[in-house]
Image 1 (cartoon, each protein chain N blue to C red):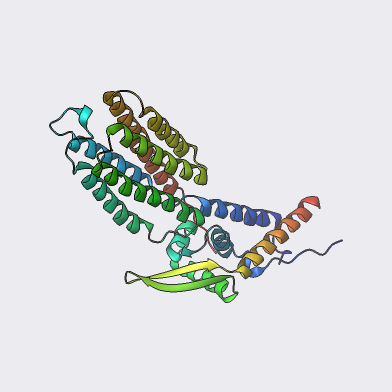
Image 2 (image 1 turned 90 degrees about the horizontal axis):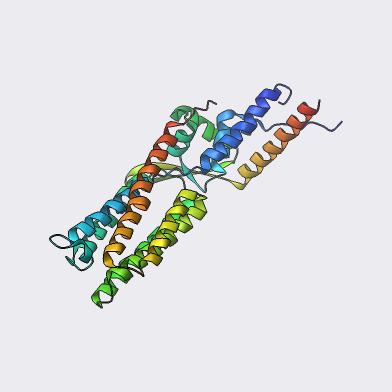
Length: 100
Length: 207
């Protein structure tokens, strides 16, 4: 019997997974856009994004536009790879579960 | 990790990925107001240029009506567009579509005054060129966004462009006013309604 894959715990968190999925569709996105799309709170989203940044899955850029602070997030290559591997593992696990 | 994860939980995760990708791909910027604004601007320009005259001479009336109205509409579009665009994500389509419209706008702002100064711009040429350019911009945007309604607007503009080469000025005026009404006013209002509905359907995701 083939060994079952492990699910990456950093990617597995619901909000982190939602953020990574959203970031695959854009080149870069602002914090407020991610908050609006996920419907989460500032604190929760900030904490989850910090975990993704720590893992090297997202890159952050802070800047001022017309004297207003903006935090821009973009997905790294490592992040894309991690999400692709997570989806593969998920499909494999589901295939196993359905087949069992 | 997978030992604790139930099949239902795994399915939910997969559904979450799919829904978030679909959500991210949705057009997030509101552009319906631009169509409405320019539709109103065309009507204002036509109305102003025919003040005290017969509608069949709308192109040769007050000389400053079109340049002033179009410049005002352009400035308003830029100001509102920049304000509304703040916080929107950067996407390839998000850069491509404004690029098409900006280039079409530049072509119009250069071509029409040049033709007018030379006295080579009559109502037929004007409507034919406007129709062709708006058809191009709407068609390209419709293809990029895979939006059949916008592509239908392109078809209306292309037909207007071809029809403008024939008939009397009265017939031309009716065709032009109808195209503006359908492709700017009606399309703009419908797009704004769709955008408002889309904004209302948002869920919440917890960690």
